[in-house]
Image (cartoon, rainbow over all chains, first blue to last red):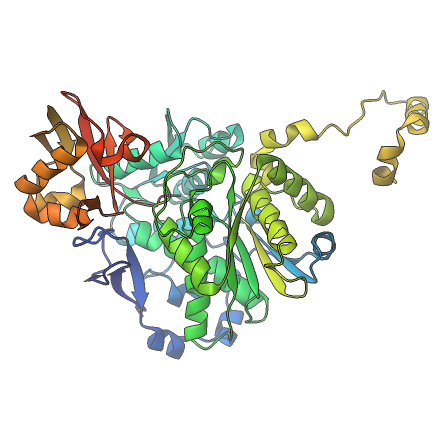
Length: 417
Length: 91
């Protein structure tokens, strides 16, 4: 049964059939999938979902596809980690990490949007898939296309981390590296999008792609026992994830599966914070910036969906902050030391911002908080490698070890023992 | 100045399916005025209010966003290319 009814323009509300159209012909606003929620409520319930396989398709009535899924059968359903040691460090009582750094198969939240976009692309007849990416999306698109045997082009900026190039290349897509930043790549892909009949997951498949991000929010609610956290802290780049988690919470409320609301907070790196700057200045318009941050995966200086991020933050009573590169690295370290999770700078940004919001009193210590961890640190080791100087180099003799152990500095002692 | 204006696919329904057009002007604003005069259906959709372009329309002069230049008042040179790009979030 088909639960998606059509697409509607987020700006003017004009309706379109759910096909290859991706911008409104009247006002050029983005199109978004709409659903028959009464039909969804009749067809599925939290208890029915509980019995389904542990992947993102357990919410398929709320995803924009018509037939069976094509990929993503091990994607989603990532851990919601109760983080008690980190909570103590931040002065919180109830803190969770939604940990997409272990999302299958390429270790980022992008599996969610790609699984949905590629499934829909096949339904719409696309046979070549492409994307504009800061790295993680390219990894995910490459992997899902490989397992489906689809032709694949991924466009990335020069600055992409080496591990993210290898992490795409192994799947044998055509990698196109562009001299410029992500915004340059995105502009080029917008121009290419219509020319070759390719399905760019985050350009002409965007109305479907973005809906996959809702599953991040659905899972948070389900894993909390169909409850919303009082605060949700999310990284912000192009502006996909935050508004879609907001939409997910709203849909669950509409279905009567959760009560209440969550204050949604946004996090950007100080070297690329056009949305947070607009938030702090009380503006509705976003002024683009040229990114300069170690948080490459969220370095988008011209976020077209930025105004929707501002709307969601303001409507839910949330806030936003930015973190310096130093604060981002500190937060990566803190997360690793307290919870044993290694995130990339985007995750460090989100955690650093959560810390600031607690210090500002915007997140009271006794209220429940979920922090979104959207990417994996093993793909971005360069940003933190200089800090990792804690090893010693010894010969394989007991004497050598004993001598070192006796001479070790007291600062190491607390960590080793 | 004669400037090459590049038109994205979703807008071509209002430009007689043309993907490029050469227009005159001394500034981006003047080129756009001529674009509006040539293709009024596209023009009315470009300008949300008065002379301010819709936030879904980005303009690039020779691959640089005009917001990093002098906005609509940016001067143009002979044989410059002005690309109209619809704002698609990407990410």
